[in-house]
Image (cartoon, rainbow over all chains, first blue to last red; front, side, top):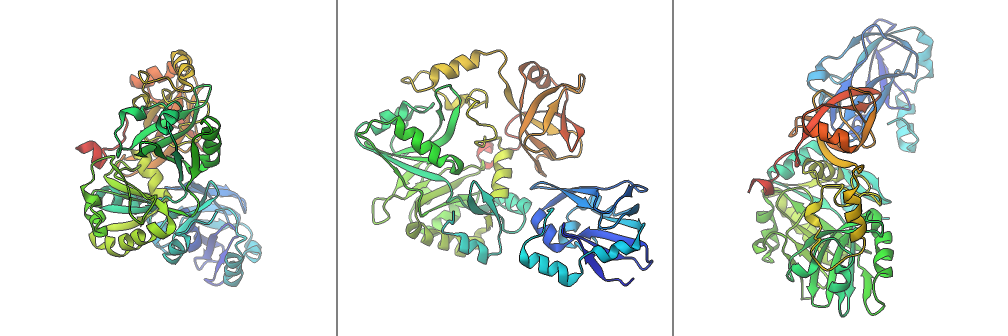
Length: 132
Length: 367
């Protein structure tokens, strides 16, 4: 698995951290713009098991609350505590310092069910994205 | 419905949102930054969605005065008045800003979502000798709000900066039917403009081109809602509904019971005497969370639902989550005396305590 980013129709991104089953998850630039000013993030507990597509975190913005779904199933192994003290990182650097949590994934084959860059951009253009 | 300034907002890459069928800017940069700019400098809001009516004919003021809670007869020409339009059971059709533009002429500003209903309600209660016109079509309306507004409005070189608080001017030159008032919905000093698109567009252009040098930012509905909630101003559909009276919402100041009788007055007074009526209160969360409209309010000692949040949000100025809620009267009394309430957010109870309104001092309350 490469360091390629893949996406969900609900505007999460997922990227390998080098180890094939260790994945980092965040929200896309499109999502952070839609969500507007992030006030805080309800992070999952480390050790929590989340199936693919299940709610894993909640982002509370000035505008509304948004569920963040696990792009792949697995166990939460890390959360980004920096965004607890500085939630604006989710807006300012959604693919970098504004990441949300890390998963040890159960089934690497689920990767193939996700959108690649081209597929995600096409989704944004067609405006059929859901979730956020 | 497409409003005249939409292309300008899209050019500025505003995040647009639907509000009662109107496409409006939610935010241009960041809701929190726009709200901060309005408290510290100034913001320019597109409020073209607001309804704007003209009532014309002999006895127009008296006829409208019989429909509203406040007293139009006590307000001189050239001053605006806030009031509510009660229904025949004492509940609320809408809240309004009114001003006379002549002895036989009156302008009314109404909420976007209620425009058609208000028009039908008012029309059905006016004698046929009076004309009621809807001036909202192809209207641009702007709100310039914030402590720097006076310096910014002077950029228009029309002398508006000398107006007094709540003063309204109606232009008498070629700018027919323009309403300019020193009013607003943010708790800050400011001006509002209502008129035909071609008349207001030059004002919009001047303010948006030259205003930024004096700290003006474009601001959207997100900041507008946050600013009004910080001031605990009611929003129709949330604090005010067909069931709720001005008294329920704590708007006693807008009701004049000594004036000539008005429609719904007896029913309002009767409802005020009801010991079971719910009461609107301000609250702040004592822990992290953001309350939203319709979140249940729970009595933490019994687990029983004792109310519902009507408006909620997060404000750095308030120091976290805060909002307005209607509460059962018995719990309301305990809450006022210091008992904590539970606000249910995403299935979890967050504790809240009573807060006086407004939640923060606006520029106008400091004076």
